[in-house]
Structure formats: C-alpha cells, structure tokens
Image 1 (cartoon, helix red, strand yellow):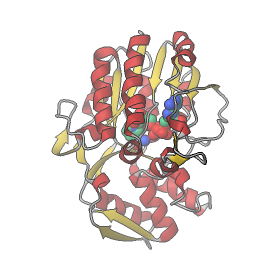
Image 2 (cartoon, protein in one colour; image 1 turned 90 degrees about the horizontal axis):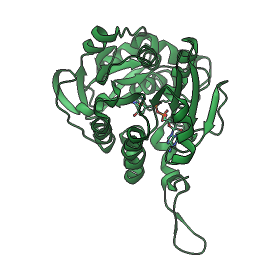
Image 3 (cartoon, helix red, strand yellow; image 1 turned 90 degrees about the vertical axis):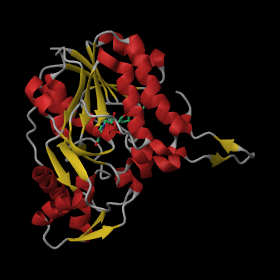
Image 4 (cartoon, helix red, strand yellow; image 1 turned 30 degrees about the horizontal axis):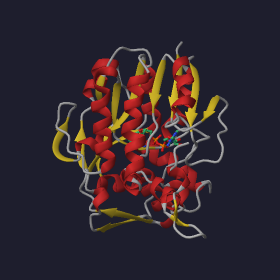
Length: 328
Ligand SMILES: NC(=O)c1ccc[n+]([C@@H]2O[C@H](COP(=O)([O-])OP(=O)(O)OC[C@H]3O[C@@H](n4cnc5c(N)ncnc54)[C@H](O)[C@@H]3O)[C@@H](O)[C@H]2O)c1
C-alpha cells in the first residue's frame, strides 16, 4: 500500500483513477484547484490548491510515496487560449516537480506528440507536435527524462466515475451524443486515424505502476480507428443517425496509429473496455435523459475556459487580468 498524491485528480482521469487506487488499497489524497467545478464530492481526502502555489503543494508531496501528475491545460483548443498559462501549468510546474520530489512520479503525456505520421508508431518514433498542447507534453517528457514513467495516451472516451465531469469534447463521446440527440454526426475530414482508449483503462495502467520501477514513455491505446469508421461503429447502435462530412479543421489534422506492445509486454497492460463499450455507455446517458445539450460549455474544456480567459474591461478603465491567470 502506497501513499498516492494525485495532482489534478478532480478531473476526467482523476475520477476513475481515484476509485481504482482506493480499490487497490492505496492511501489517496487529491490536490486540485477545481478549475471546472464548484465542488468536489468524492469521499476521499481533498486539498484545494493551485499547483503554482509551492508552499501549499510541498507538504503533500512530502507525505507521498508516489505522485500522479494529471494537472495541466488539456487539449489543443484549451491550450491555445492562454499560451503563457499553458507554459506555466504544463511545463514549468513539471520542472518544479522534478526538483522537489525524489520518489515515484507517474506523468500523463499524449499520443498527440506524434502529430501526423504514417505507419504504426512506437515509443521510438519521432515527435511531430502540431500544437502548443503537444509541444508542452514533449517538453514535459524531456524535463522528466528517466525520473518518471509517462503514458502517451490515446484519445480517451467513456465514463470515468459517477462524480466527475463528463467530457464531450472527445471524439467518441461527442459523436455518440450528437448521433443520439440530433441524429446527425459531423465528421471533419474523417480519414484521420486515432488511437482510442477508455478512461478507466488509463486508471488500470497507473495502478499497475504505482510502485514499479519502470521509467520512460509507454503508448496506451486499445484500438486504432479512422474517424469515419468510428462514426459507422456508432451507427451500429444509433442506426437512424446520419454522417455528415465537412472540411478538415486544424484541430482534426492529427493522424496517427500507435502500438501499445511495449506496455503490454512490459507491465501487462490489458485494456478491458472497447470503443463499443464506450459508445453504449454514452448512449445510455442520452437515452436516460442525463445529457440534454451537447453544446453546453460545461462539457468542453475550450468552451468552458474561453470566457474565463477573456480580458475584461475595468469600469475604471484598462484591462482586468482574468482571475484564473493570477497565481494563487
Ligand atoms: N483526456 C484525454 O483524452 C487525454 C489524452 C491524453 C493525455 N491526457 C492527459 O491526462 C492528464 C489529465 O487529463 P484529464 O482529461 O483528466 O484532464 P482534466 O482537465 O479533466 O483534469 C485536469 C485537472 O487539473 C486541475 N487543474 C488545472 N489547473 C490547475 C492548477 N493550476 N492547480 C491545480 N489543479 C489544476 C483541473 O481542475 C482538473 O481537475 C492531462 O495531463 C492530459 O494532458 C488526457
């Protein structure tokens, strides 16, 4: 049993991970500034704080045997809103982490570091980051070197737990909700490949590595699918939904297939949940009336953060710095 501090643990992955860490018998503490939430209800020790506030974070690092670093701005759109904040949260905080913690670190990277490349990509394949988000993860990995294990995650889908925010800005979740609610799925381009992974299978991989000594990059995915094939897969469950193809948008130009053999062969990575499982999970949410409006900003990192980052005019003249930007 280890003392595990999950920094950024109140989010999408954090919800699933916390459950599985507790089930595995670990002592879990969450540190998070609730960027997207007004409350945290999970019955687990919770510390409200900003990762940039070293004095607030340090005592909890001193307590921990293992730190799982989930914190950061996530996704191309969200990171492009406020590049300086992205650098602070996704790069500079990682620098602080390695200088202030000498035990086990588990870090989340992304397959977006591969950008657009043909063939099946392994951990030896070159980087081709197409966005600030992807570049910030490349930098994070370089800073960590052999001080951490880092998972290059595919595009996630599915439900993490019963408490945490659902993200509908992820391709499988979004297309399924649109197909179920509006009977229409818009696909940009469509021939891009994505490695997909259920959010609860990320948690499984982390739990297997809480006290392992493995370091370096590991791709994690369950199935590589072309977006158009994903839409057809969804039609299996929502036959009255049509697929509409539109012009490729920049954020959908990523295109990669990966191999997760290294993770399978090294630590027995064994994803349990398929895209079909995720589609049915999300479909149930809609048919039970639990999701009403797919375009609500609460489901999208970019749409939720955009107004928080917008400079505001002071009634006395001049700009007010968005509060989320101020170090706390
Ligand atoms: N979801 C995906 O598809 C995906 C894919 C690849 C990699 N990842 C990586 O996995 C990690 C977690 O992703 P997620 O989907 O759970 O993201 P998320 O946005 O749901 O969670 C991030 C958490 O960090 C917290 N946070 C943000 N700024 C903070 C600050 N200044 N101080 C303290 N807490 C702060 C937020 O409140 C949130 O709870 C990220 O590093 C992400 O880049 C996610």
